[in-house]
Image (cartoon, helix red, strand yellow):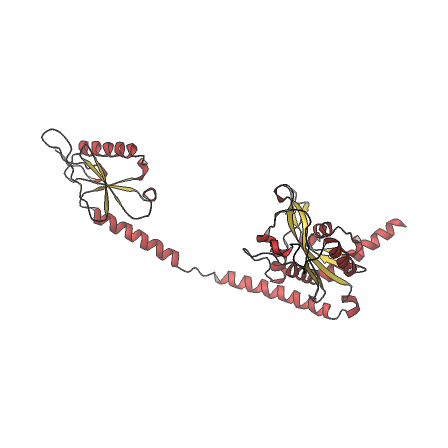
Length: 342
């Protein structure tokens, strides 16, 4: 009789025609029982059986036909025990060590490739360096222009950012929970938590940083909404207001501001991204992305709560970066409007 080779090997039969169990068991293998002389073992390579395949050792002295029956019975046994046939792995008796060596070599190769450090190409390094240098030159140029601005002019600007919590069903509706106002130089003019009279259904702490105790009625440092609105209104009176997505902040504060005195970095066209088939529709971008792209600043780091003071400062810095061009565009637009009225 021809002997089976590879995956087709089976166990020998006795005088009654039954398949003998030629299975070798090692100390680290677990017995899964025997069906028609077939012994199944599984190596404990993981905490759960489902994560690793079940190894079945085929006796070396089986014919091709006997090996076929051996595998068929093994699969039947696996199904009876609720195991997946895809998790069965057949190994010829005596070749366990070879298989283990192959697996060890594969793991080692995977480990090496994982630990291998990949360095950027020299072209990428040079390109990045050139971009950073160009960006820094633009920032330095604008800073020089801004430093020449008279103090009286700088005092006209304030930046604001608010944090909101969710109220109502599923916390979809927003309520003011914190308000921060800074000046041209980033100095804090106001920073306060605001008590929320309605029941808060979502504190949004992972984003807002607001906790229950911050806006609780017992927190003496927190303001009532009306008091906060008056304080902010006083600071904004006669000022040019800078911020990102100011519509949300002003809505939460329940106040309005003259459109001509608003500098919203979310609505400034050069800071927006083109969308749609023809690219004609502009959409706002995240403040975090804008300040990193244009200023190299990092805010709203992943996994950390937002800080309204940092966001207000970042908005002001972003405006200062684009101020010269921004104001020229506004001036040009205003002249066009006046001509049209004439």
